Length: 232
Length: 242
Length: 77
Image: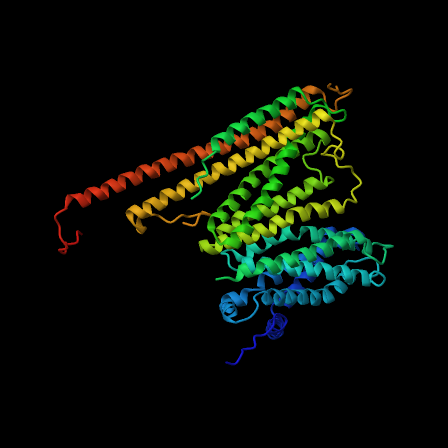
């Protein structure tokens, strides 16, 4: 009897990730929407705040909120294809580790957020930010990466829950936003000193620690419960 | 088949005795606080409500874990009732908290108190539990997804408080609680009795609610047995299996 | 044994209202719950009465034609 070789978790996740990225590249619906949304939001903030430039904690708050709402667009779309085209059933039939779907989707969302930020953060510096982005750049990248991880993990979990409900566009945000609050607080407060007029180059350690702790705990938790969401 | 009504009378009597005792202690025994005066008496109802609500949420998460591990639906109903009760106690916490804030500081809400902020975030999260549940029609999937949510949200509670506490760069002191654990003896006793009383109340109400739900399900099951499947009308909004 | 405040933050008559308000909130929550349970209990009682009625009605109609064999009955319009 020939022993069937089933793909390992990482291989499965990589395959699904590749599929999602290809779909996005060909379709180009989610990512441009997220980017446009962020840019328009910056303009709205400019008029809403009625200031020439913003800096410090205010700037960090505006950036965090904009990234959050753009991320929500991506989160709402994350599992829609699987839901509508029977991808879940096909996945359940395949002899693969179910958590691979979680890893793949979270990685996809993370990558989307990174691409979003590559465009949106320079736009933010151009349109709204007073101080230069040069000195704090590395620190900003670090804290944004941790924040993106939180958004990706929680976003995937919440999206998987919401896609099976009746009011899927509503349920995702209302569950996700409170869950994300500690991470968002940490992100905004951590980025504040970076964006200040004579800002430091490194984000305050306390907020980085909170964000890292949050990421680890929720990544493990999501991994533990994800199987139960996929059962038929 | 668990009967939740068993022991309920004894439990409720114990609750009455302890809560009455606690109220007596609060108003006749506990000394007046040097800073806040009579206002501080709210502490004895506000903090036990808060602690019980938070423990109730975590309790709901634990019950949800058991549900997912055993697959027995009764644990999911227990989890649902635990969270439901904790939400009610949480509303009581927020209401008494704002009254205390108004009396102490003249504002109905203060952002500078990390505990109150953490609590608000937790309440916002658990307020989504019922909308989530009732937006899933398939009963089996509903109970499974609700349990997943209860576990994640239950884990979130201690994390949230830890994070907000760690982040205490706040300049203001913790205005709505007494400093650290330096409660003088009589106050500590009063607080402890109040806490036990509110915890007993939570347990009593939990059992009470479970008994009511179980009874309703039994009546439906009886009707189904005696008169056939068709005579039972489907439930609309319900966490019960059928 | 007891320590009395030297200068309470709010004068007693003003403070009393807030404290009373807080405890009244607590009492109201518990009583509202009692009221909700009361209506649930009434509904359960009604459901049981209805069940009793329906079972009796079914038994009655079964008893009304005890000598029917397996012969096909005309369906009543």
